[in-house]
Length: 338
Image (cartoon, rainbow, N blue to C red; front, top):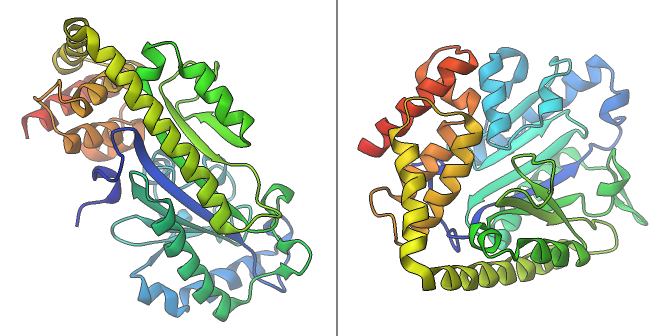
């Protein structure tokens, strides 16, 4: 079966993917910052013996056994935090299935970070999957819980449900019509976190954003999902409206998008920053039915495989920046010709 991040899903012309995370700690153990090595190892042993591993076809992968590129590639897929892989790797591991849509991180900030990923807008189904896994693990491990504060986590901002729900949205038309800033400001006013996923210093700079819940305490999981979905639906509506406005100047739009496609597909070398900018236009062109020379699947492959660590893993080489730029251009041509 194809990995989730190569697939297209519901509303995926605007919502690229969904991520649900629940943080939990095992009762009777101190938080990770205070864990002794023997206790951290005991947590790994408990998870390795759990029946949940077999039920969901999960495999334990210890970070100390991975090479640096493999660890970094998981960061590029949003499965691991970059700070997590740059600390002491002893007794740190993940449980992951073959499709990579389930990834449980062990001994990061909390004992367990249960994650589910899906292409497109799949908040409810992703929550159900995470909650199902959490409930089964709770029966075996007994998670730390307080009647007043809910599930106990190392960070006060995660108290209560311990739930972080997020969607990544691609908003090029809102950017081109100069409406992006007011949409993002409105989302922020509604109590959501907004993050430019490519780390632009100006929050309004990019076209691809992660939107996630701020509140975890005093609200149930279903209401968190309901609120985020309502905002995601509105964003989808506004982005599609902006695309209709752009399409009124069809020749100008086609010219702009095909110029980006031409540079992308004919470059002999290309930086990751150039790639991100050009791919935003190309993805828009494909989603609007303007660019027909490339499919959604190929766009998704280019998006994932062109990133630094994944690019090097794809070619099986450790490359400096200059050579990565050359190989990135080679990868583009190869995938488009597939």
